Image 1 (cartoon, helix red, strand yellow):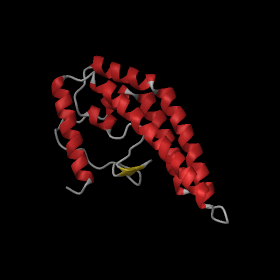
Image 2 (tube, rainbow, N blue to C red):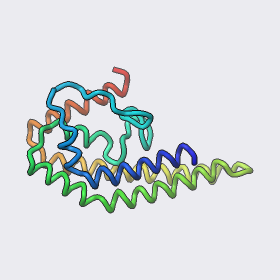
Image 3 (cartoon, one colour):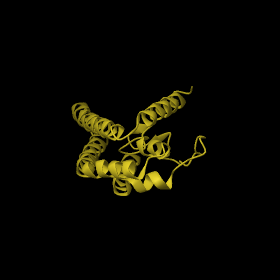
Length: 169
């Protein structure tokens, strides 16, 4: 199995786990110390993941971030409902991504090299990645509607801090 297909399988699994567990993840990973959590990654941990650097699955760093905001039980229920409402969408995107990545891998390993096919299948992969990014942004926006003003401020600060670490700052 190629590295790309293995990563895609991990992505799909992470999607289903994140959506299925929803608020359970928020409770189980609550960090009340105010300090950065220890690295719990591995090969596909926070620095890298399905989709490339900085990706942790379908929701990127949203779930661990929410776990640090001290959500109320009502907020956790709302977040879980939002995640569940998008489960079919992310499942379909995962299927599209698997198909597109498989086609690209086939195109890359076919002899003789067909540059046009590689470019076409690369564009299909890029289109799926763009659709995933849009879907994640919509979910993030929905989830942010559940947060208090203070939680939104804290979330934005945590996201900026995480983005700075990704650039070597």
